Length: 153
Image (cartoon, rainbow, N blue to C red; front, side):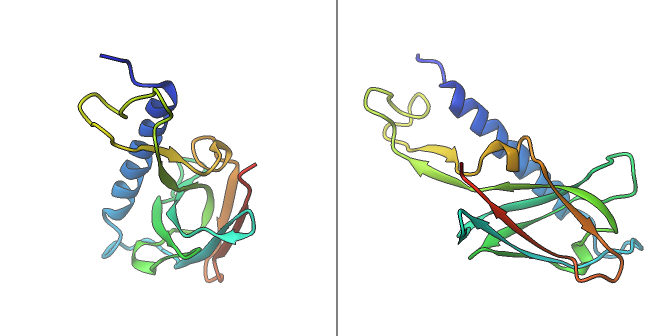
């Protein structure tokens, strides 16, 4: 049995973390008394709207009063309704978008027993997700529209 390539393990962990964050973000929300705000925005990769992906907002100070939330990016845009929105504060923003790629010659299947299963790779550089440098400040009663122009380079 061949070991899993390091880049595949890293990408699998990243995808698992993002799915977990989005799952947690989807819980709760409606019915609480938090001063949540609606969030809108867009993501462009190299000047082109990102066709699909995920955006996650995490409080910059995890011990503070912030909330986490995430949304699906579709056609470059995303939105988080007020009932699932964010309370005012500063947030770290993570953007992810994966794509399937064919295994390189001699690389074999993605996992033992998968046959010709494609590999999944993160299209967005780590500085926008696993090691994000992006931030957003949510304001009470503000427009709270965040447009992110990111680069693949």
